Amino acid sequence: MKEYPHLSVVLDEVSAREGHAEGQAPWWTYCAEVLDHVRVPYDVVPAIGDLGLDGPGVLLFPEAPSLPDDQAAAVRAWVEGGGALLCTGAGSLGAAFGVAEVDPVADGYVLIDGADGWLDGVDVPLRAQGGNKLAVGTDAVVLASWAHDKTPAIVLVHLGLGVAIFSGVDIWQSIVRIQQGDPVYTDGVPAADGSAAVDDGSLKCDDGIVLSYETDREVPPQSAVRRAEGRAGLDPVPIFHRPHADLWRGAFLQLLLGAARHCGVVLPWLYYWPAGVPAVAHLSVDSDRNSIEDAATSLDLFDEIGVRTTWCHVYPGGYDTATVERIGAAGHEHALHFNAVGDADIASWGWAQLRAQHAWAQAMTGHEEIVSNKNHYTRWEGWDEFYRWCVRLGIEIDETRGPSKRGNVGFPFGTAHLAKPMSGTRRLDVLMLPMHAQDLAWTTHESVRNVILDQVVAQHGVAHFLFHPVHLHRRSFVRDACRDVVAEATRRGLPWWTAAQLNAWERLRRNVVLDVRHEAGGGLAISAHAPNAIPGAAIMLPLPDPSAQVETAWSDSGSPVRPAVVERHGMTMLELATDLAEGTTTLHVTWAAVAAAPDGELVR
Ligand SMILES: [Zn+2]
Image (tube, rainbow, N blue to C red; front, side, top):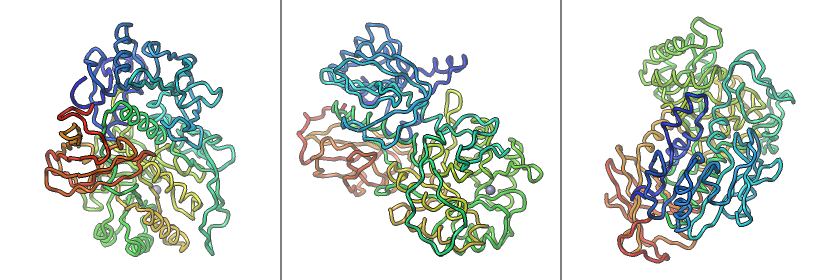
């Protein structure tokens, strides 16, 4: 194995491109996006033959390889000697571990009860897209099973000093298809209970929802909110109450970090947010109607509650100069609200229309830097076409993907995380910021609020609430609902960030590369290579054992290092909070309760 990093991913990009040319979707290439977001260090190799397999480490096959017998035997011997293997699918490699694929599952549900200690239990059947039932020997540990017939879906095999994990679930396809939905060419099928009539003759991203209205929703628990007045008839309806794509990300991370720890490999990762922040909240505003009275009421409210928003400007019209200036002066972000609903000239779906409206927003606001967008009425067509336009135009973050109907609120695209969309065999350089609810107390019952916040905190993502100034202006109870969601998120420790802030932070952290090695006396040295300084960063390390305590933690840059023990993704982690300088910052940790490794030995 190479010295650094300690995670090797076997990902044959050439055969992915060839397969794509023949019509196969190379879902497995998306594992790089999942790893890049977590910011765990890894190395990509095109073939197992390129690895030495000469020491402990973690080996990830995002797609089951077809290996000749001698190579499969070499991998087995390496695991036996203390290696950790993770494989999506089983293929011919599975045979070396007594694991076989039996029947394919195109669309199914997976049960994770958490009894084995490797995965946390999940309280709903997890939606899976693609995969296989697995057949295993009696000594395998079944970590997850297919819901319809209880056959193994994810299994673990202990072998000698090492461990091998096989996922019959196509985790990558599941994440991508739930997040990005199906391509939108026609109206979607509405919910049978009438709560989500997406068949409204207007193409939107929620026409392509992969999650099921019948099996993936639940009515939220009754809200503690009691208002003297409210909207008549606005009763709770079922919502997508669990972020299925994020639950798959979390399960994968638990398997990856668990396997690494089992084999004595330390895998650090750079936490999603500044140190100590459990999750983030985002409030966006759509300027529909462009009324300066609506805007004034909303600006007064945002001043009062101290929140900065992303203000999405819809064509045509715009605000007067004074309103635009007040929005900017209060720290709100000027963004585009691309209009393709056909109610004005150039308000139709197309690259030229998007480009023209972006230029209009720049001219109307006097701001060149329009980096964020949300589509009016969540309009959408096709699959990745709009994201390709964003890249061409310089829109760096799009926050369209979310509910347009009362019954598809919550996590209709299964996520609270920032992610880059898949396109062919690659990712596009635009961030998807999911949206979770519109106009609490007006179009969405407030009982959804805490469900969304709780799940976002559990996944350490970003909770996105959208309000329209027109509803804030007309109804005091909508203003109260806005006050309350801001207070409730703040009470849980979530700061409110604009889309531009989210975009800048995510792009900053995605440039950081970590590595780790043992030091004399049993300590660790974790180096962060950052092209730009990042204040308040948090480097996470799974604790080597539950009793481990930090004796000293310091940085060679002289910045203070604040160690803390935190729960992240259901695992106990050591958080090392510090300012990362431009260039390389190395943090040093010594343990009070862990046996020392020999001097200078690498952590692998
Ligand atoms: Zn709108």
